[in-house]
Image (cartoon, rainbow, N blue to C red; front, side):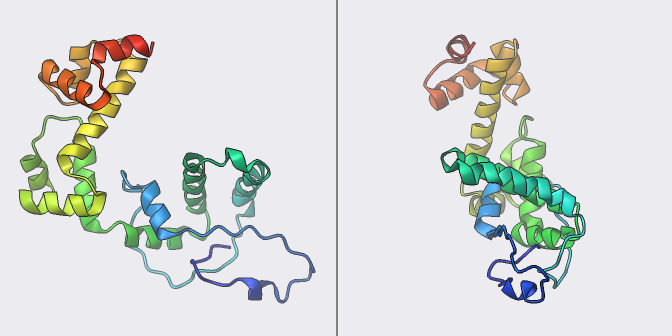
Amino acid sequence: MLLKCGTYFAELFENSISEICEVCVIHLFPDILERIFKEEIPFFVKQRKSNNYSFSLSQKNVIDHFIQSLNFYFDNPEMAKEEILYLKIKELVLLLLHTEAAETILELYSFLFTPQKASIAGVVESHLYSNLSLEQMAFLSGQSLSTFKREFKKYFEDTPASYIRNKRMKKAADLLRHTSLTVSEISFQIGYEDSSYFSRLFQRKFNILPSDYRKSNQ
């Protein structure tokens, strides 16, 4: 079953032939879903409309394995870390897209991620590592610079400059750990033409120079 939060499901079993039912209920709370996809717009978001929130899934095998995979965390709750649970919910959402629940999932996410938010995030994600100014990103999203900054802060609880800088620094750290690219090459690849400026930003973020970070993480 796919159930909207707050829907009671006991009546679905009133006419069940079996006297014993095993039920695993997963509530897709909107605030949790927004947190999981906070920095990305789901690729499947479209405007859909449906009034059905409770129904059986004929593609039972799609969900069976997922439910079984949860048993490990019920048996070992100490392993159920927040990051893992977020990934499991994300996995469930993607699995449900291959069932009759797809329309409801699309409607839910279309509600969570408005076209305006999708436009802002889409522009930023597409040009995250290019050398575009905020004025240019605002223009691409069809907004004035002040509106772009205000709407971005409202949706992502961070300023565009801070968000972009943090994403770039995270990317730089990954490249320093896992590639042999020079500091200058990494700087250029993530959108900074001045490698000295990049190094200062990196040191401000991680309290260590890029070259020293690489040595300590080899």
